[in-house]
Structures are given as C-alpha cells and as structure tokens.
Image 1 (cartoon, one colour):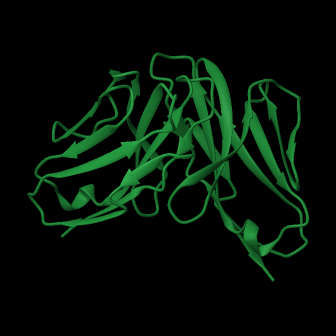
Image 2 (image 1 turned 90 degrees about the vertical axis):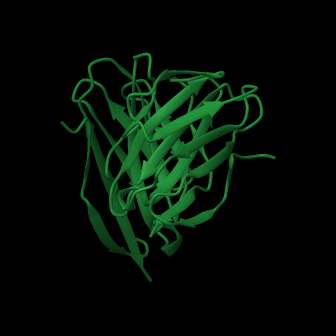
Image 3 (image 1 turned 60 degrees about the vertical axis):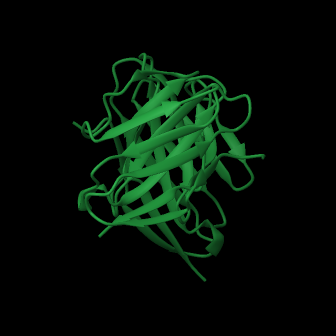
Length: 112
Length: 114
C-alpha cells in the first residue's frame, strides 16, 4: 500500500498565485517528513518537519505538519515561473532502514 | 566538493552488459542511500549504508543488483546482465546520520538499456 500520498498530482497556476500542496502519510513509527523540489534529475531539500504545528518558512515557501491527522502542506505564495517543478514529500520511519518513502509528487507549472 | 557527485551522468548500455554507477557523498556524511526513478514514477528506495555496512538491502529489485561502500565514502551500485526495465535515473543521497537528518541528493545517473 502507498505510505505517502500527494495531491493534487498536477497543478497549473499563473504567476502571482498562491498554491497549497498536500501530503498525507500512513506509517507505523513516524520519525520525520521532508519536502523536496525536483527539477530535472535531482531533488533539492526544502524542509524537514518533525513536530506538529510548527511552521517552517523559507522565503515564499512554508510548510507545516499535523501528526494527529497525518498530513503536511507546502504553501508557495506569489508563485514565479522558477517554482515550476515536481514537489516531493517523503517520510522517514523509525526503523532500522531509515530510508525515505516518497510520494509520487505534485507537478507544479507556473504560467507567466 | 560541496555536494554529492555521481558518475557517469549518462550511461547507455546494451542489454545483458554489466554497469557500475559511482557515488561520492558529502564529506563526513556517514549515511548513503541509493534510489531509482523510472520514467513517470516516484523515487524507489534501493539500499542504504550506515558507514560501510548495508543494514537494509530489501529494496534491491533482484540479485542482479549489488552495492558496496568503502572507506565510509565512495559507493558503487552494480547492475549485472542489464535488462531494459533497469532503464531509469539512479540517484544517490547522503546524510550526516541515517534517519533524522535531511538527505542531500546527487545529480543522478541516467541509465538507458537498449
């Protein structure tokens, strides 16, 4: 079964719009949730969230985690064409593996 | 170097040949991960190393896949007798310690099996 589900699968907006990307997860022993931005091949790290209710911000991007409802959102305000990318959510379990379980991502396209 | 590096960046090989992919993690990062991304699909975990040991190999798709890491540094992912379904981007990531810390990804190796 899918441990990490992202929505929407794709999104097209105009420059200046605000977007909210969703990530829900289902893991037995949650350790942390991470957001990545993927352009071309390699994902680049955006945020790591471990505690509920604490918003993390970086410029126009922000993210928050709800460990009770098992989801996270990534907000992007005043979108720019450079924000066009696939946004990946990943969850780390408290297991020996400690690997990331990725969602399939949300493809964001920002139109000028 | 400042980041994770991988080589080659692109590899085209004939079905049945063996290939070796290399990853140089960020200096001082004890954990190293290999992922695979097939066209249109999400990232798929393959294997991770803590130091030179691989505690979890469950993600390796078949016994044609193997990986090793030496000196708590460079890692190689070897695919023997490549098949067309092995075509994918192979990504390597490293982190300071497995689990809690964010992973930093290399640029990936695009493998095409013809």
